Length: 250
Image 1 (cartoon, rainbow, N blue to C red):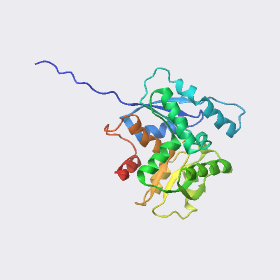
Image 2: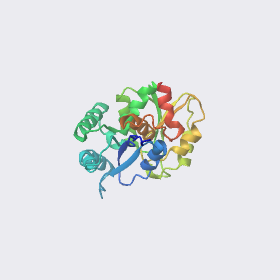
Image 3: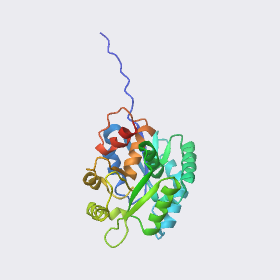
Image 4: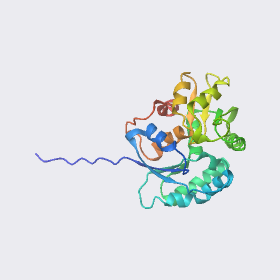
């Protein structure tokens, strides 16, 4: 009896563009996506001496070249895991930019901000409680972005890292302490913004309210990537929260 050849499709490939010092995006994406996708990373350049706004503007300017840095590696989709730089754009400007990047790359490219909007639309979310690790001016810019997109920001929970603002240094205890100082409704949609703030443990602890929707920039981006990179049907081994947007959308 002859051997029947079985064609097994390759695991979808997701490109991830992250700031150089971001310690969180890759671990959280791997946690959410499990073995259902292969993850490949390209990092923005280090910019010694640049102020935060100048750095973010430069990230947008060099993003086409950073994406080109994947070379001839065949990707099925890419996520720009830097929310802050895209807050400098209006939602319409963000959509136009990502459409241009997609056309140039030959595969879907989406910012974490647009992925978050896509998740909100799928869930029917119209209002947010914003949990932000950013400096005040950048938190204000973030709020403006969501409101321009048609969402109502009901309240803002700033989360500094001790006595200063640094998303990469925020701890789970910092998040829980600050959120605990606010009276969140049981049916609130809580958005932990920024791809560099580690949120998995905090979302686990805060997710007991059955009607509360918890989203993070990385969670929304991983959710979008499943469809964007064709990973549906792979039996993803990700975090239980990853199933929430898709389940509610259905």
